[in-house]
Length: 146
Image (cartoon, rainbow, N blue to C red; front, side, top):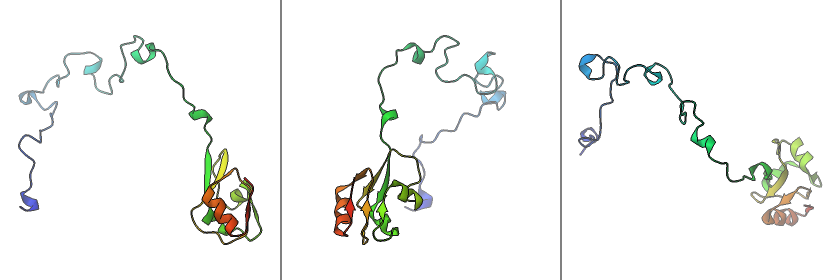
């Protein structure tokens, strides 16, 4: 068997209905849309859920549930390896991270994660620090005040 021998199994492909192609097509004149009315006209028609002006079902049913999404804490994440841009003995806080371009979106808190290596002695003052990041910072001679 070769690529040019491949073809779909019989009945797998169906020709699309070609609406509006003359009387002999079986779909001529009104083009399968019936006579008159909003759904027979050209254009978009009616939106899903529209019930002719009656109050739609999704508005008749009571609202249920609650989402805490509006109250979640948005973290901006910085990896330990990215802190190499700072000089030895620098205090790293949110303002310093923003100045260096490591944090640029609005957030509720900054968190340092442990990916990468750190060879500089830094004092880190952010909202949260992961265990591995804390270990790497202290191993390099720095300190964490989170």
